Image 1 (cartoon, rainbow, N blue to C red):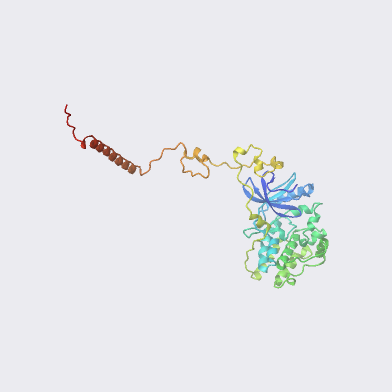
Image 2: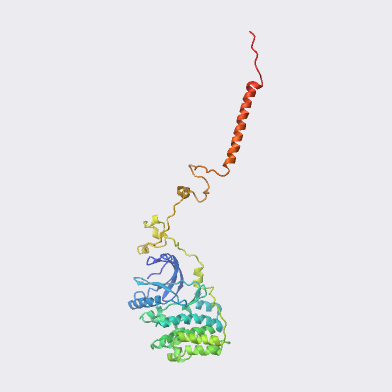
Length: 414
């Protein structure tokens, strides 16, 4: 599919607000679900993969499997599509950042902090392993930290679908630091492959580095076939021996020598934490992360629907940010009808006609009858007294000028 722009819609429902992160296979956008009036994340596949029939079919099946998983330490999946040019997942929006970004900010972690990260990762992963799934891409980029400090594992199924695609081998090598030996030499993969990758993540949390390197990605990948992962204490001082043993078991070159699955790894981690009496720790939220920066910006879309009288106008969709090329596929947003409200007589035609800068207390024309207040009796009494005194003054004046001042007039002599 072509590059999405801010204001585009996915299937007429998800309005693209802004990109959060880009990778080799996909771009993650913050979106507005206009049907449910909430923010979500859309992971949209790169155009290089959308026409691969094998990739699309397996992506669909793996997305369905993801949607069946529900766990506080797994990123929730709400919707997906593998039709036409749009191949995407709609997921829970994470407002914190990735473990990769946290490592970049803070560097290596002490054992109690590394345990606080790995415990929820292995808890979520064990939930998937219980359903027979293999993640295949455990790495700090796929471990997310939400704004409430919850650690969540993301991206189930996507790499598995890509791994079986003839077009995706180079993308798998792109995360070579965390690959298990089985992923390098083509041996059958089990859940122990995820255990190996999680062991590499624990090594990196403790030391700030990954165990192997190479001049080329291929040399880097093959290094794990020839060498064991070194003890973390050989890279940084202060790592307890029990953590060296934990990492060694998780990253054994032979799958049968590792923990069988994430559940066994988690039990061993809890035993080590109890033996060392490690304190509790709240995983910090990255402050300089792409998700955090995106969350700091208000959404550029109005979540409320268009006014009803605009619904039939062709331009109405463009005012919602849908370009003409996508307007035909954008469906109207259903909104629950508001309960009818009967306005008072003073609100009906007058309130709609009063400009914003004019006080609504100003009486409209024609003026309504002035209501009588509790002071009307006093005003009336004063008025009557004044009227009486005025009338009396007029009468006295008439008497004075008429007879009081001049008296009787004598008859004239002829």
